[in-house]
Length: 456
Image 1 (tube, one colour):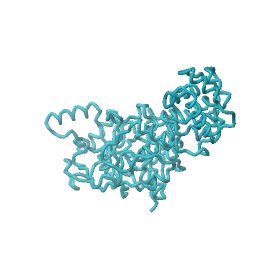
Image 2 (cartoon, helix red, strand yellow):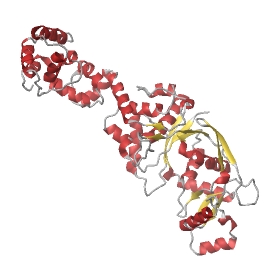
Image 3 (spheres, helix red, strand yellow):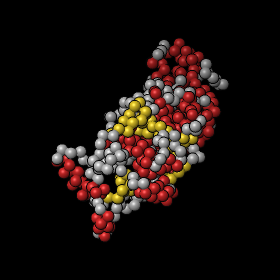
Image 4 (spheres, rainbow, N blue to C red):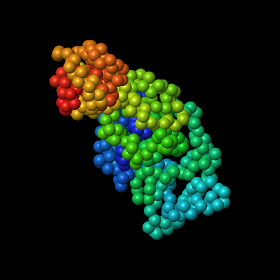
């Protein structure tokens, strides 16, 4: 059996780290299993779905390396949904209802007032043919519900306790009582289809073998299993992962752009830092930066995913990002450095990589070694003597220790008293890459100017 999974975002907003976690888990499972990954746009909400958001979702996935040649859009499959709806009507699984939202709300309030569960009472199933005709004559548009199999096959309408169970690949044995649920609406009065229906039809047609999604869909799974079976299909395997929360414990929302994938990309985070965190957060594995999706896939297992909500911390992402840059080989960074206008080659990258938090920070250090720096003069007398002791070029990594040793012997300064004034003068900053690596890049001419307090 070929594993087939799907990531099914709605193009009604930007993807955030929580959405991407679902995509990453699906992708890694497919990659490890030699399976296929379907990107399905659940775009039947025509009022809120936009091409801009759909393009943004595709761009986010491509940037993260979650590429696929298998795509689908629900808006292209409307005729198929009508076809399947007719099958359900003919089999008696789908029935017409006429209540307005206000009528349903009043009915729920009456049920609650009587201490009854606020579930749909199947009043529409009690209508005679004449009563149906009267509703149509009053220009009431029907909406359609799936009749859940919770009456043990009897003619009675009152639901009985009816457990639908499955072995969840993450949560273990799960069960949902269909007797405690309302018959779900599958088709609205305006003829549009709801997610529960379209998703199951798609999963059947695309032969999805595993549905990997958030734990907020557990109850929905019981209903969907009933719908799979009503359509004569074997339900796929399910895996419901824990949800992500932000640093304050609040659920993530795609309407909150703070953790949107687009904003992380624009802020200069590395794609594999984002993927590494999304893949490993909330698992038993240590959150370590990975350079390739393949190594993450090798270690993937549903059994490693915790049931507890996982906390997304920006500080953790920043740490992963820095660690990736610190070990990135020059060959991988070269093209991006050139795009930043940096021509320092491998020696420059070796000097600064260990101090970068974002790739764009490299430009700051390029300006230090190749641009004009206004020096900070902390000890003019020390700097003057240091300037006199500057050795002739060529310089290498041994120049700095040899030169500072000579300055120490000449002035008696040592430790911070020696090194801090030199760093401030040479770089204009009180911290940064090792000066034994930077000094040869700065060169004697600039070093002499800066030590004398001049911009250079």
